[in-house]
Image (cartoon, rainbow, N blue to C red):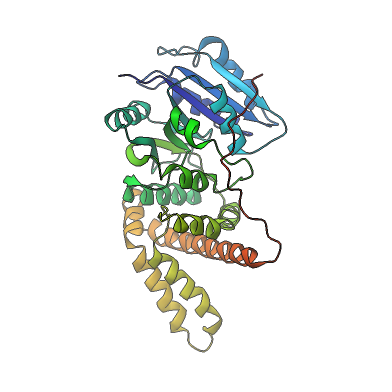
Length: 348
C-alpha cells in the first residue's frame, strides 16, 4: 500500500525560509500528492513566494517536479492552529504531513514516516526530530537552540504520548475522529491535541524524520519565547496527568530542580557563596550528556557557553511556569475548552 500525502505548511511572515522549506518538500523521495501553503495573515512576501511554486509544481529547474503548490490565504493572522485546520479542510491525501515554514526536511523524511505508518496500523501519528545543524546558521544562540532540540527529541525516540506537529505525518482518519487543532491556543496546541489523540492511536517519535530548523538567534527573544510558552505549561501537564498520560519534556526533572535550587540560592550568595556555586555544578552534572554533545559538535569551548545559555533558558521556563500556575489560581480564570474543535477553512 502506498499512501497519498498532502503536505500542509502553515506560514506567517515566512519569506526568509519558505523557499528552502518548499524546495525540501519537492525534493522528497516520496513525491507528495498535494502541497498546501496556508498564508496566515503575512505582511511580507510569503504569498508571492508560494505563488511561484503554484505554476510549475516545485522550484524552477527541479527534476523531481510535483503537484502545483496550492495557496490558502487567511486574514487577519489567526494562529498556527487555525492555519493547520484550514490545511486539513483542503487536504485530499490519506496522510497529512505538517511541516512548519521555518524548517526543511531531509529527502527521505516523508518516505520514512509513511513506512512506519504502513507497518503499524495502530499508529496515527509519526513525528520527527530537529537536525543538530540549523537551516541557516546565525550564531551561537541558534547553534545551542537546535542542539538542545535535537538532543532531547532523539533521547525520547520511540512510542510516546506526545506529538509535535512541526514535522509530523498524521493519518487523515485521526482528524475525522478527534477533530482538529484548538484554535483558541497559540501555544501548547500540540499538547492539547495529543491529549485527545493518545487514547485512540499510537504516537511514534522517530529520528528517521529530520528537519533543519531556522531558530531564534538572539538571547533576549529566546528567553522571552521560552517564558511565553511556559505560561500554559502547568495547565497542559495537569491535563495530561488527569488523563493518565505523560508528556514528552525538553528538560529532565534533575535539570529543572537544580536550576530552581540555584535561583533560590542566589539571594543567599553574599552569606553562603558556595550555595549557588554548588547549584550550578549540580545543574551542569544534570546536563552532562547535552554538554558533551555540544562539545563534540562545536568544540570544547562551546560547552560552557551552552551551559550558561541553557541555565538562563531553564530559568525563564521556571518563571513562566510559575506565573502560569499562579494565574490558574486566580478567581474568574477561564477553563480550557473541552470540546474537539471542527476542521474548517476557506480556499482562495
